[in-house]
Structure formats: C-alpha cells, structure tokens
Amino acid sequence: MGLVEDFQEHANKAKTLPPSTKDADKLILYGLYKQAMVGNVNTDRPGMLSPTDRAKWDAWKAVEGKTKEQAMTEYIAKVKELLGQSAK
Image (cartoon, rainbow, N blue to C red; front, side, top):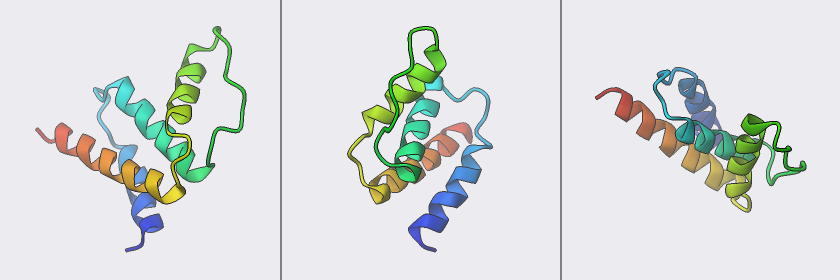
C-alpha cells in the first residue's frame, strides 16, 4: 500500500477515535492533516473571538515547513499511537 492510501485509511480510522481523546492530540492530527492536504498555512490567524479556529490555525502553523510526505507519515504514526492507547 502506498503512502497516500495508507494516509487515507488512517484518516478514516481517526474518525473512530474515542470521545475521550485529548483535544491536544486532536489538534496535532488536525495540523498534520492540513499540512498534508493543503501545505503551509495560507490564511490569516483567526481573532481572539474564535478560540477553536485559532487553536486549529496554531496547530497547523506548528507543522509549517513539513513536506506532504512528512506530514502524512507523522499523521499515520499519531493515529496508530492514539488507537493503541484507546485499546488499553
């Protein structure tokens, strides 16, 4: 299976993460997903009145500069890690 197919499979698996998954972990996944799909941040940072959007933007900005392949690989590893934790 190629990297893109593996990434797509894990993106689907990420939707099945338990509700107890920490927001910080969800933000890491969000940032890596956006970096893999879009590339570097291409929007202005949301204002103080949008804390959720601002946190998502910050998570994406934190992984800026990673290649599509790096972001996909790290995303897959993070999903595997979180699914492994939920099985305990």
